[in-house]
Length: 120
Image (cartoon, rainbow, N blue to C red):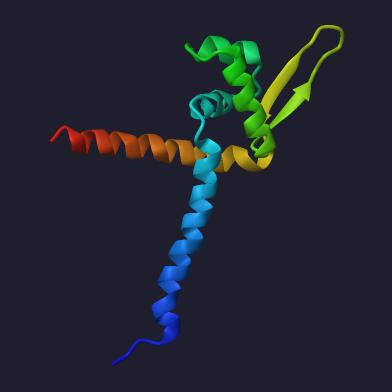
């Protein structure tokens, strides 16, 4: 009994396709401060000064660079709220809010499972 070419190729093609999509997400999330920033943004819009206080050890330059990266990746939007004083806010884009929240929760749960497994 032989498998059809479709049966043989489908899992490999599917895996390759999924791997490319997953790699794209991982490339976006790879920055040292990215996950911290995104977790802070789950609560709503944030200013750079808030992120600086909330993420100890992150320099203003590093945070700014990460914010620009996330903006280019179209995960967040930068809003200039200035009237007379400079007031910039960053916010998760509408289409990323829910999926990102689920992804971060899943990663946190997975990490807990991995930690439990490593203590055995």
